[in-house]
Image (cartoon, rainbow, N blue to C red; front, side):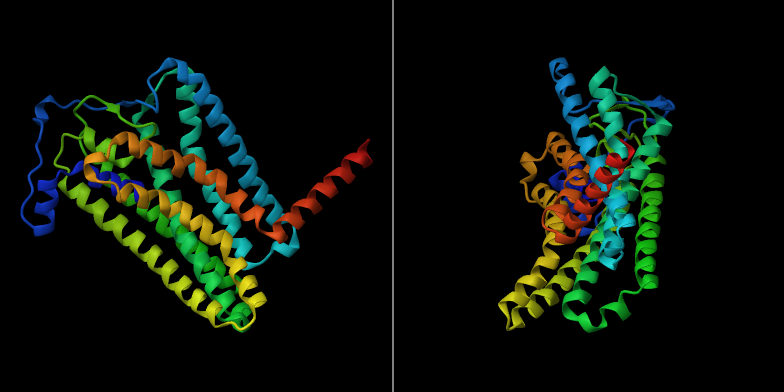
Amino acid sequence: MLTDFIGVLSIYNSDSIFLLATGLPYNSQLIPMENSTEVTEFILVGLANDPKLQIPLFLIFALIYLVTLMGNLGMMVLILLDSRLHTPMYFFLSHLSLVDFGYSTAITPKVMAGSLTGDGVISYDACVTQFFFFVAFITVESFLLASMAYDRYVAVCRPLHYTTTMTTVMCASLVMGCYICGFLNASIHTGNIFRLSFCRASVVDHFFCDAPPLLALSCSDNYISEMVIFLVVGMNNLFSVLVILISYLFIFTTILRMRSSEGRQKAFSTCTSHLTTVSIFYGTGTFMYLQPSANHSMDTDKVASVFYTMVIPMLNPVVYSLRNKEVKSAFKKAIGKAKSSIGFIF
């Protein structure tokens, strides 16, 4: 979500941004439509053009994807099998792992294949599908992080009402709302991007089908499409960030009012993992946004997108495992059962 929003910003020059801000009419440069042909496939440039880097990149991506699969699927299985983890926080975490697995799988296998073979060709339909699921899952994650912030707010600020507030119905409704918003958002963006005519060279300067490089290929008037991205992504991010900030404002205020240092430490420790995940997720986009426009490039977008599509899905299970005693305990219990089962068989 943030990468799309910031990437579209980079498409504008200073004059067009001024025109948008002042509400004056904006006319993008068009290519005559009579020269347009129906695009059946795109060519993804990838991360590096040097053939010597293809195998090393493939090995790196394969390792990252393997860790991502093991971490997220392992977290989901662990939460499902251990009754001690059947709480609202871990219910949200299981869906966060599912979403991380989802959008990593939408991107990484194709990147791995391209790195190994040097073939960046992707069909039009595959590009649409990849874009749709990436946007859907990244949006769901944004809203899930907001829901988890609210869960932490109730746990810290209203502990006596936690069980009556964060009921099974409440948690299921929040998660369902995240998925509905995510897939609705993806439908809007997919229709918005792929309604355009692509009559330029079908070379996508990226390693997957993302909005900014696709807009750069369009020979249609992109003004409406760009404004839709600004408005929809902006509202989604604003809502999620506000929920998170307001939740943590109340959380920190409550923690500071606690008289016991042990109580403050315990309350803060329940939020550490989520706060770390939020910082990583939004920190990448913030880093890109704060760059001077003169230094902004598609290469920067690619590096940031690697974090979004590959590194963050790999890190989230690690973050929630390292500082979480309950997850560590459940993992040790599962390993113990596995060893006992193997010993029994042999």
